[in-house]
Length: 292
Ligand code: DHB
Ligand code: FE
Image (cartoon, rainbow, N blue to C red; front, side, top):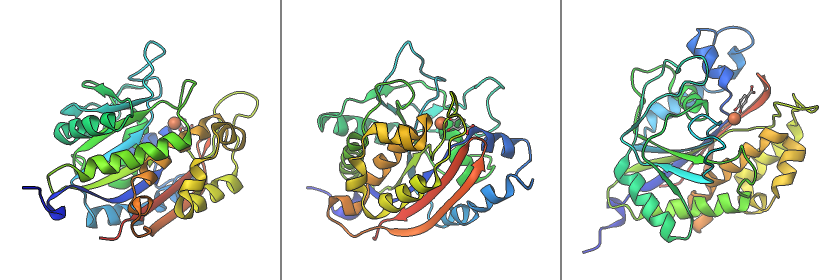
């Protein structure tokens, strides 16, 4: 007998946020109330409350590793964390004092099976430390808890070493992840988070680049025209949003997993926030909720 819709997993919401490492350091070192950081953390107050009230059973957290777990020795384009747990990485100053991330090996293995059979090549990762790309978004939405509120499946995307995947491919991958989640026969509420961005460039003559106009248009289009946005070529990200602005393609994975892309209702915009500066980066943040 096939199980009813109510007994299957579903994507309830997507969250989008920058992952600036200095935000993690500000929190860890007790500087979040300083005038420079206060407006950044204020933009996440609603989100922390929202997450407590809309606690998922699992988060699929799309992020990029910054040559921490991977290196030039091995560059997976898409990699899914299937381990029981993932320790915070040492990025040069010792590991961040944050909880170990508990995985969800059963759902992760199911997503790997389903998405690979939908013709996306995923690297299966059974051992990995997670860097600021994953831990800073969790800190922003969860604060400083003893344990993260639910299991997290790390989903790593190469946006560091060229060639990087296109926005189009990321958007299609999100759709495949949605189909995978909906074919998992446990009634789990699953959120998908897309992280990185917004405009920033860390090196070269254009270091410090911020493009508020581009970022604002990106947020508008991510909400209302994700399909059109997914056709933007990667060179436009680099030209307009800086060399590290390419991290934004990861937001299209989360957006592709939302119901409207598969013919359902448009999502509700629960929260939108934009602030400059945080370190070298424009901070952007969105919460989109699916209808029941
Ligand atoms: C900064 C931002 C990033 O996304 C990153 O990975 C490293 C540094 C920054 O703004 O300093
Ligand atoms: Fe980054």
